[in-house]
Length: 358
Image (cartoon, rainbow, N blue to C red; front, side):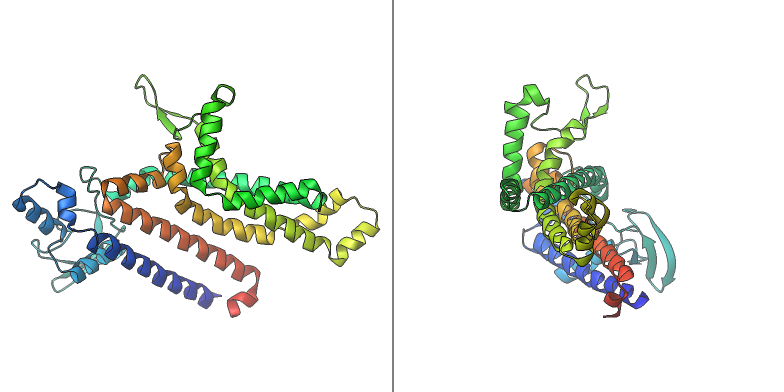
């Protein structure tokens, strides 16, 4: 089991390294001069040269890439010379010095995602820490809605198998998987936040916390969570519903279910006591994968509903060419996706030892 876990961690490290490499060259080399993006088009050549030297943009691309990896790594290497590219000497982040080898200091630190181009030098980690919790709340709410409604709809489909209710649920599930999230967001915001606002009390846009009209602080607005959570949960809801229906039908064909029917138990009792638990395995598998995907899929939903999460922050950063924020957000989402998948794989290996032995 230990070897299985270490193997998964090794694959995860290589995957994350590949993501970081692609992100670095995609957003550092291709867009143009990052120093000019920070200062604008009307700044002097002297100011641009100062920024390039400060952030290491005057170095060759290979050196910039190594420096970027050094910033992201928890264990990093820094020159003891103040005039070299060394964020330790410039106090850009806090680090604990482990030991020194010649002119190189080895330090332990929190991964450094650098600074925003457009937020007056604000650290990217601070930007992400302010917005990521809202995205996690939205993703968890969407998953809960998808799981509860999907399981219920799947059971109803089985109870009315091949009837008009079953066919209607299957049609809605297929439609839910086919319609893009941004289109669903526009429709839901227009219908429930505008046309039916008088009856629903819901807003077209709004975040989890809103500033008071009189400037007396922020207030929790849970009603703003409802529409984006439903929209974000539509596609996984459709998947869960279909998986639940198919899995439950397969379980109901087992011999022990026939025995339960022969004893005179009702279909409701059979599903509740015997079939439901054994039908949830594929549903749990789907939910674990969808949660990680939602962190990335919430981009357009958050932007349309004005939800102050990481997805909306990514869109705003794209509009202003705030490359460090984009890069940092993508790396954080990729890391969360990898961590969740490792966690799920380890659980599978623990539940079924044959998997870890392969």
